[in-house]
View 1: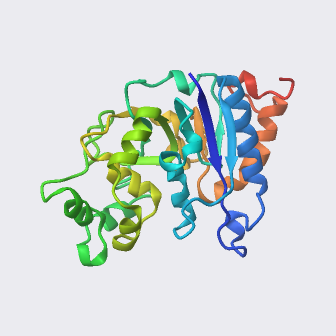
View 2: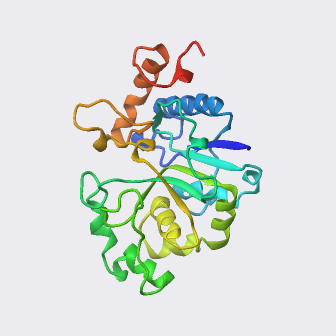
Length: 267
């Protein structure tokens, strides 16, 4: 198997300090170094992309490049990771999912009602003239269409996959190339970014989605107030990302005890 761990950093506005401006910020450098070491541990190649693919669209939609750019066709599996993450496990994620599936991702727990994502209920159910995503889905796929339920967390209203960790098989990427609807039309008719686009497209019955457990993409509001991050991959959202350099240094120095033998400086 030829596997790739892919990350991308595309600057937004140069005055946007939170996103690092036009330079790769320290938190992204640390996230990249961690991912690069994990890729080596997993026997995968590593790439950090910083070029544009959809130059006329929101830069975040460039994460969809793996479906259309021929340079990625040589890989059996591609893991895309956000840069605001630290990996803390000795488990090889490329061996932790069903190879017959099209993609492996994590359902975002409590996204419909709990903090910080109570916004989802507000934006999903608005009518089409307000560019609501459910209304747009029914327009695309028929009046009886709805988002599927999570197979791991069936008590949730419906499945909502976080785009920070996506593990795509080759046949899944080719299927996406064939069945994903126009991203340009999506941008015109909705007000959401690539994560909602991927969720919308993966709601089609043709896709076989493997749901990883929540610890493969664990977010601050799930850790518990005052508790240490407990994920296999911890996702430092918003301003939490600025803690990444210090945490990563502690992991490498052995001052912060983590399960990743591969992340120690001596290796």
